[in-house]
Length: 184
Image 1 (cartoon, rainbow, N blue to C red):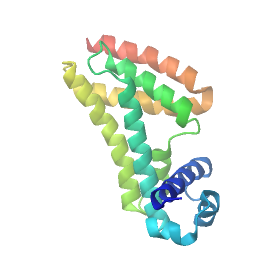
Image 2: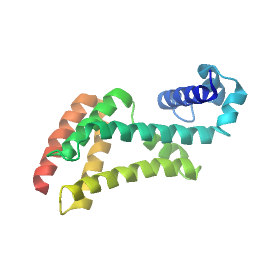
Image 3: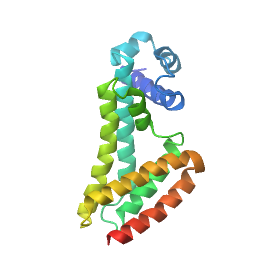
C-alpha cells in the first residue's frame, strides 16, 4: 500500500471512529489497528491526534461542500430549496448521528484553537453560502435569509437524530418554501 493510500486509510478510519465514538472516545492505537498501519505511519503523516482531527474535519468539510455543489443549481428557480434537499440527503447518507463539526466545537472549545476554528469556520461558511445565494437571486434581506437558512439546516441536523433524516428534511423543505415566498 502506498504512503498516500495509508494516509487515506488513516483518515477514513479516524473519521468513522470519531463520528461513532466521539473525539475523546477514540485513541490513536485503535485507529492504527483498524487502519492496519504501523504506528510510525501515523506519525509520518500526523504529528498528533489533534493534527489528525484537523485533517479529518477538513476532509469532511470538503466532501460536504462538494456534495452540496453537486445538487444545488445556482441558476435554478430555487437554489435555497435544493440546498435544503441536498443537506437532507447528506444527513441520510453521511450524518445520521449528528454533526461532527458541532461535536468538535463542544469537545475542543478553548482547548485547541485550530480544531475549534476549523469547525466554527465551517458554520460561518454556511452563512456566507446562503448570503451569496441571496445576492445572486437579488434578495434584499440577504443576511436575514442567510441566518434563517443556516438555522434551518442546523435544526434539520438536530431533528434528524430524533425523527429521522427524511421526516426532518420534509419539514425543513416546507419551512424553506415559506421563507422563499416571504423573501419574494
